[in-house]
Amino acid sequence: MTTQHFMVHETAVIDEDVEIGPGTKIWHFSHVLKDSKIGKACNLGQNVVIGPDVAIGDGCKIQNNVSVFHGVTLESEVFCGPSMVFTNVHNPRAGLRKMDQVRPTLVKHGATIGANATIVCGVTLGRYAFIGAGAVVIRNVPDYALIVGNPGKQIGWICECCERLTDDLECLTCNKKYRKSDNGLDEI
Image (cartoon, rainbow, N blue to C red; front, side, top):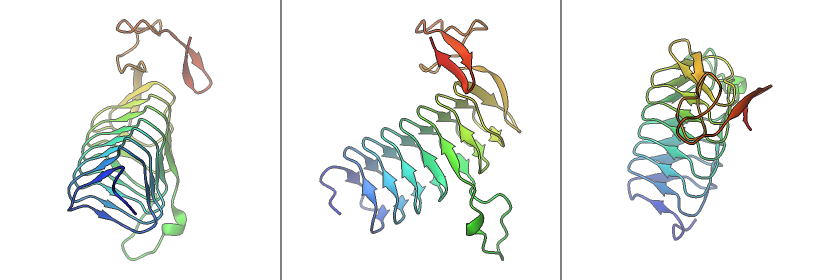
């Protein structure tokens, strides 16, 4: 493994058999476990743990103190806020080995997960969804949905530019317009 096309801080640990894309930065005290794949131009903050067997798309930003466990997939341009949490086994016990019961979690392109949010395993977060700080997500989230609270509840829709949409599904900041679809919203 060579670091000529990506940056790894001297305190970070990179296991064997990982792929790291060009332009990616891995900061202090982070650990990338075996068989994980990290796309290009990603930024992994301090004390981030990836894997094993995790796939992270291009342009993702994973803030300090986040662990992306086996079973979690991040598509491109996903933002994971500081200290947010992914789970991967629904009913863990310290004395029982349950890694054969990992429930996959998918975070789709452009989604944002706020600081200290918890994403319970087995859900899909839609494209450009926005999970507010401290929310606890226990079910699938539609594309462009704005989720807050515990348990997470949809309170509106959010634009690709990360501004809240009007009741007419229009963005007053970038002027994009949306319509409802089977997956949440689609841009018009």
